[in-house]
Amino acid sequence: MKAKIKVAVVDDSALVRQVLSEFIKSDPELELLFAASDPIFAIEKLKSNWPDVFVLDVEMPRMDGLSFLKKIMHENPTPVVICSSLTQKDTDATMIAIESGAVDIIPKPQLGLKSFLIESRNNFIHVIKAASRSNIRILKDRIQKVEVKPVKKEPVKKEIPKPENRTKPKQEAIHHNKPILQFKTTEKVIAIGTSTGGTIALEHILKELPHDAPGIVIVQHMPEKFTATFAKRLDAISEMEVKEAEHMDKVRKGLALVAPGNKHMVLKKSGTNYYVEIIDGPHVSRHRPSVDVLFRSVAKSAGKNAVGIIMTGMGDDGASGMKDMHDEGAYTVAQDENSCVVFGMPKEAIKRGGVDTVVSLDDIPREIIKFRY
Image (cartoon, rainbow, N blue to C red; front, top):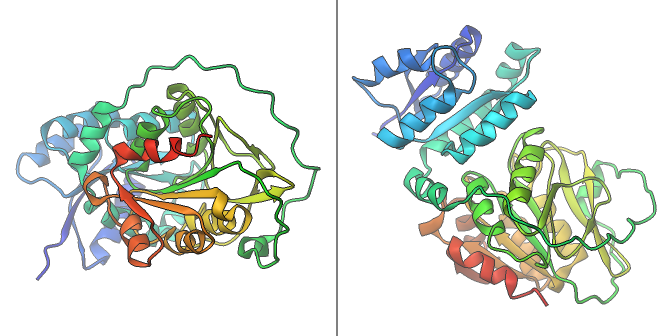
């Protein structure tokens, strides 16, 4: 019989501890090891037993979650899921936690907490199980390689005006059923999709790219409000300009656009120029933003002028879209198992026959730079 995944919950909210404990106890694959109100209590319990996954709050009395996370990563590297409030202070602290080794984020609102937690049961369980399968030692090694020093950037070329103002498309625009009139262009578009372990992986890639690298569109599974903070961090360490994508942003050389949390991002073409639309719509492959939604739009709008890169992450989001890109003539790349924190998304894309080449994370920047000119 398969051993259960042992979970420890450390959160100063009695409500959060109660609801999460009920979730964990109700799932046959999970076991609640303990629920503690702060890290000091947790440290005492850890003397007798150690969990497979921690669910950890950021702001707590006596010892904050960041200090406890660093202690965990130093003593016994273990997957940690951060359960964080959607405030600016908490999002900033949570990004520091991700930089310190946390594998994923579960947001919690300031209001309507109980109903939110109950509605999010399946997502909580999915994230905990995904975290348990992560290769935390690879993540720890990557964290040590990423430098956080801001870079001096080359002057950014003046951006070409965005296409004429349009209203945001309705949900059915996700499917891209209408044929697109193509104009020849030599500009390459790099589309990247990733999830668990992707924040550190993206930092590793972006800091290696030159200021005039091809335009990049990125989906990193992350809740709303966290993507803006993440994009700012990437911008600080990269010679490229990096920003959270806005509706009708142009895709251009030297710019990387990160899909905003809780919105889909699709690539469109106007003449010889590419731009993105930020749209609502149902979750696709369990996610919003979805890598599949982005990749399918890139297949339609850019075809052989695109490069698709699928990286570390749990599940199969992006596998179908990458096959579409491959079938339309795009060059497609998957991160290899040895460098993935979770070899789920790349494995599924390879399995479906949509991948041209499999490379390590260290080699992905080279794959992008190939299409610089």
